[in-house]
Image 1: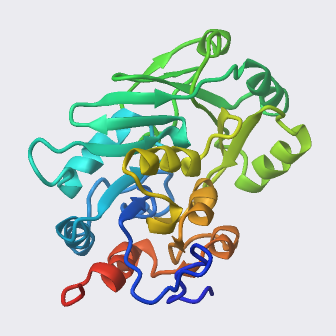
Image 2: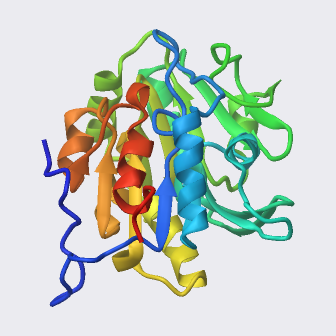
Length: 293
């Protein structure tokens, strides 16, 4: 396990002693929300300890940024559950779609979006997994899908659409899901295909996220940090998935959730408790707990 007290390298010559994050980036599923055992979805509720810890971050004047693979409309309810933003009139910064979309809330206003031509990559994956499910966000409504995804895996409505139409134009993110395959199957396939010119992330099962090249949660968070006049040396991030790795490496202190796979844990500076033991609260209380500051 990584050293739980390690901050990370920080800027040259800058001591770790006395460091406190000014920006806290939080993944959602498996980090803020507990996984439903045996299902590809999470409980849409925030543990009281986590809610209170996030409020202490805000009380100390640090910025909280939600950073998720979810589409924007799937994230605003989580912001509401956390009490974000804290003050009426404030607006939250949010990194969505694995960094391809950055938006403010409330109201939901997309301020930056990266798009790409996903058709060639989708066709290549479907050659090997012809029965796979494909989805692209239909903003404010849900997703356009070739067939229905398992219950609870996508937020909003599912609009049945032919694959060629789904990827006919530029998109910010494509989801490919094969309930009959495994995550290892998709890792091997992505390595075999190469998927040149795009980024890909394999999820908790046979779930493949395709995004524009160079786009990740780290690139989205960097854009938000610049808007706030901050840099990676000011930031703490917590996550549990492969799509969190770049973000955990970009920040001054990247923390993996206790239940994360070894690949994610190895990329982090530290490992906190699992989502089932309120690992986010444990980590945040190191820096913003009662009696600190």
